Length: 194
Image: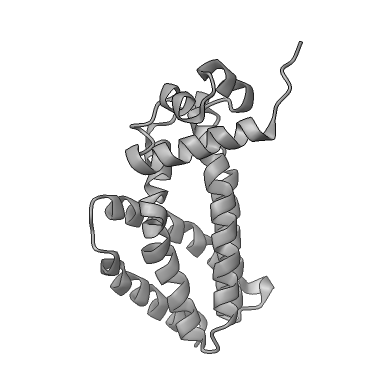
């Protein structure tokens, strides 16, 4: 007979795992530790999640969705185009990697240690890149049919995000990314606002 999944148990697993990831990182957190922290047996965790990676994505997805909603709202509140674009890159490269005690570094650890059998999907990255492209296209006031380059740029911006997240973990000062964000903003203004 199949075990009935309970939202409360799932929530306990996620809460325990999030605390452990924040304290020990992805690599330093084991499924046994997640089981102990959540008060659930290790075998019962697998009723809810197929892997540690799936647990991390279940924590990261809602956080990133919420942060991109907030980014879009913030961008809409800034009247000047160049300042909007600068704010977007500062968010992506400076603020997001530092949030939640550098939680984004858990994603970098997970991606660098995962294998195909862990069930990695590009769905979250694809969604983030598409959402960033939309926000940048609106910020730069580029018509939808001319946004092909913006989609490529969003991909590059997320690859750079990975580096900034690792830098955050290594103690690079949070404001060290600002010149890069500002330079990227200036380049985009030259390219798209001529």
